[in-house]
Image (cartoon, rainbow, N blue to C red):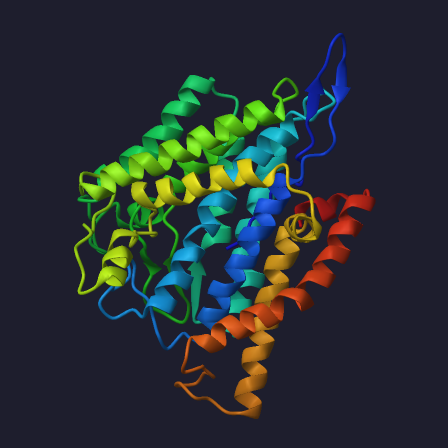
Length: 398
């Protein structure tokens, strides 16, 4: 999963009698970099373990625990990225200098670029075919649309934005019974908003919505509303306490809703044949679109990570901040590296699962993932440093 949020995480500190600048807070880039590394694991799986498909939610009875764990870890990527996109949008519009910057044009242009990249450069990276047989409208597409929508509504009163954000995140599960058949009026709009499916199901090029839009709008709006936590007047200790309370509150609410199977997930959890299968059932949530339980789990952990990682300064966090400073460059690069690896293996070894090269045991996926992290890091770090030095406008979009 990826996004192109601006690397703006500098805030100021309030001192008496004057305002004193506070050192740059890199935690947003650090967290973004962390989920990018986790995202790589899921994309390695989709490249070399595609013959072991996972459903949404996953089939607990037939999914091996390793695969379930890897897929569950990947669940954290998109919600945290979309939330950080909204948060970074607020930071872009409200820099530490106090001189506000116009946000609408920035988000409209950046969001439009993401949609364009999804249907061209990124689609080719996934399919290796041009023209592709199917265009999948995935996470980059939905982030782009969310940025466009946020660009249009961000100036609304905070109370209205809060109603939109909380209403969509907490209330969209009530819309699950609504269903449209492909031939019915409203099918295409509802497919974009809530139910994944084909917009174009026939012909030389099909178009499928993989990421329904509606709940993601709520998440990006909530991220934008969280921006003032990183404002000039908020001290780090107070911010971390707020984030810890938010994270604990989300996870506590999740335990209540999920534990009692009250609301927030269409698939109730059940006791399995053993403890592992029971735990898997409890944490088996719908991603397309993200259920309330899915959002509570992923964002709750995200709030805790923002609190815990902020004061940490070491080589690992610096490396993660480098990755998080050039998210779109990383996203495109890692997809094309995976495409190249798949092409090479088919050419050298031959296809092992249909027309693709695949690995029979999931342990190999962990090995490939770990082996790719360092080689990807160095070009991304170089681009991130170039991005910080240059005044060229186009670089901001990567």
